[in-house]
Image (cartoon, rainbow, N blue to C red; front, side, top):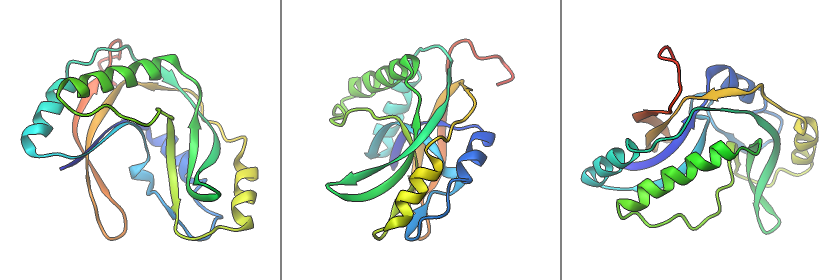
Length: 183
């Protein structure tokens, strides 16, 4: 089972993000239904470990908080861009939640994440050099911003790889404190 922990985005935010998914040839865009903010990639685990991780995550306590997305950028290896993404406004509550999730997972025996947490929503991955289209896309979308939305919980997802794109399945949802019952 291939797992990750993420914040699932509201439909209206996904719809806004989906409007950005065009204009750069050679990009494999993430389907709108798969857009999320990863808190921790776990990777392949067996069923027993998956249950242990799910149990550990159920013990995470953190308050609900507001979050907004803004700006676009690219991750690169050296000078070769490979991933287009939307940024997340600096948010201490998000960082706090991420630390709680990481701590819970490490207590199960999972190795600590080595990479620094860089909150973002991946929009697409480049299969070839985008040329001048990438610069135009970055300039055209530099001021992208969402209205703030409430983060009322986080989700443990499994990822099932397919020929077109991965299919994400919510295995467990963990509500945060202070979320109205109708959330």
